[in-house]
Length: 169
Image 1 (spheres, helix red, strand yellow):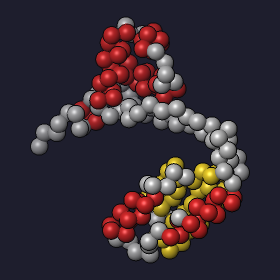
Image 2 (cartoon, rainbow, N blue to C red; image 1 turned 30 degrees about the vertical axis):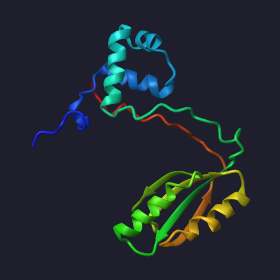
Image 3 (cartoon, rainbow, N blue to C red; image 1 turned 180 degrees about the vertical axis):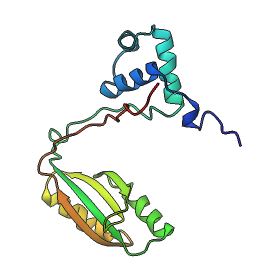
Image 4 (tube, helix red, strand yellow; image 1 turned 180 degrees about the horizontal axis):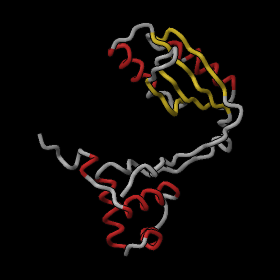
């Protein structure tokens, strides 16, 4: 069966210009098309078309501003392991629906290889707010049977850049 090229990310073969565009935009999404074109060695029109094609193909999901959590008073980061009482699609769907509505949760991953079903990354102002989140929201979600929290002392690496070195044009 032939797949639609718009939904098949492998249908778009990335060349060296595409990889340079992706690398540059990961570092600075606000770069002008003119500057991007100069940096990667293309004229502006083809560069703009390539960026649009990468967006259309789903390689670029969105462009966002990265905010400083400390300047915003969000100085406590926790990694939280969640155990569920039952391993059913309905139970997981219910948990995931509720957790999506929690602005404190930056990441939620269904995991394997540890004594937990989910791992969350949570940011809050302080331990008091974490306690409110834990007792007021998290432990009240139907099906949550265990919660284990670890707190970040110091963030050593903070990057949103995906490695592209494994992709060969």
